[in-house]
Image 1 (cartoon, one colour):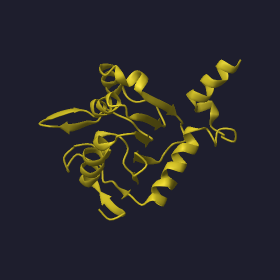
Image 2: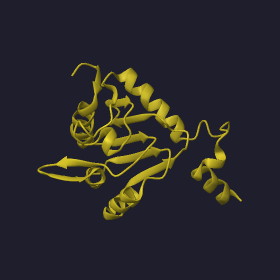
Image 3: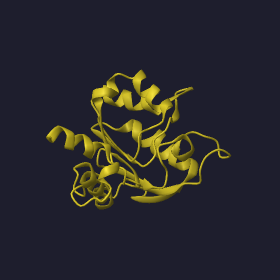
Image 4: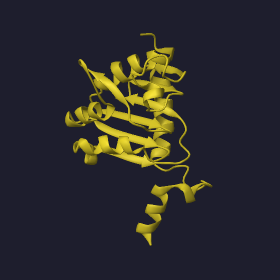
Length: 179
C-alpha cells in the first residue's frame, strides 16, 4: 500500500474493518461521533463488530473508544454479550467529538467521514450504505498527527475551556466524584 490513499464506501469496510482492525497486536483506538450496532463478516458468518473487538481484547490488545453520544440499545445488548469488553475497553464520551478515526498499533490510521455504524463503515450493500470517504495511511507523521488529536481529547486537554460541559456525561461524573 502507498503510505497514504484516499478510499471510499465499501473500500472503507474492506481495508479498515476487515483488513487492519483484526491485525491489531498492541492497541486499537476508535473515534466516532455515532456508534450503532455494526455487523461484520467473520469467516462465513456475520457477527457484531464487538465480537472482533472482544477477540482482540482477549489477545491483550488495549482498546480505546472515544465517542460523542451513548450508543443505541442494540449496541448495548451486543456489548453485554461479550464480558471481556467491560474491563477491556476504555471509553470516553465527549459530545464534541465529530471526527472519525481508527488507529492500529500506531502504524496505521484511518481518518474520514464514516461513523462506526452499519451504514457508515459496515458490511451493508451498496444500495443501503452511506456515501463515505477518508484516507488510510501508514505515513508515520500523519499517523502521529491523527493520534495526537485523539490523545489530546482522550486526556481532556480541551475540557477546561469547553463551553459544552453541561452536555458531557463524563465531565459531570468527574465533578460529582470531586464534590
